[in-house]
Amino acid sequence: MTTIYDVLRRPIVTEKSNYQNSQLHQYAFEVTPSATKTLVKDAVETIFDVDVVRVNLMNVPAKRTLRWRSRRRMVRRSGYKKAIITLAQGDTIDLFEGVK
Image 1 (cartoon, rainbow, N blue to C red):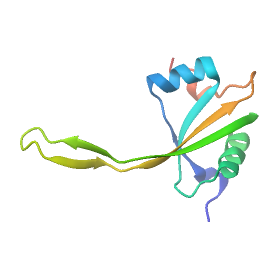
Image 2 (image 1 turned 120 degrees about the horizontal axis):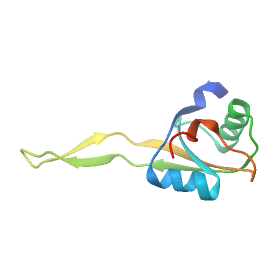
Image 3 (image 1 turned 180 degrees about the vertical axis):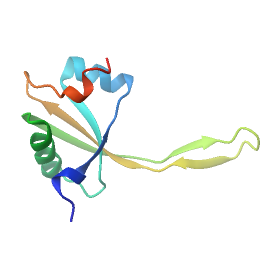
Image 4 (image 1 turned 45 degrees about the horizontal axis):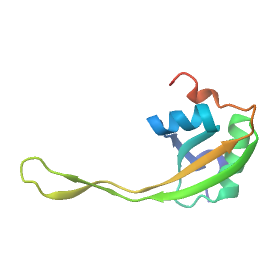
């Protein structure tokens, strides 16, 4: 059984997530594979003290990369579960503010 503090693993910071932060009020997190929408919503509202409007979950597949010398395809990164959280209009998460 996971607690609320174990649900969120790490924030995902990319160019696309920075655009979503500034324009759409959406934040991306990597979550545990057994996380549900209600569990993620409760975790974000408890930890960051914000109002969550919507939660979208998706399973990101494993990425295959190419070895340079042998040119063989090898699975290098495992798949994970990603949550995109939409916040209310006036709320922000301070964790992402210095990244822009």
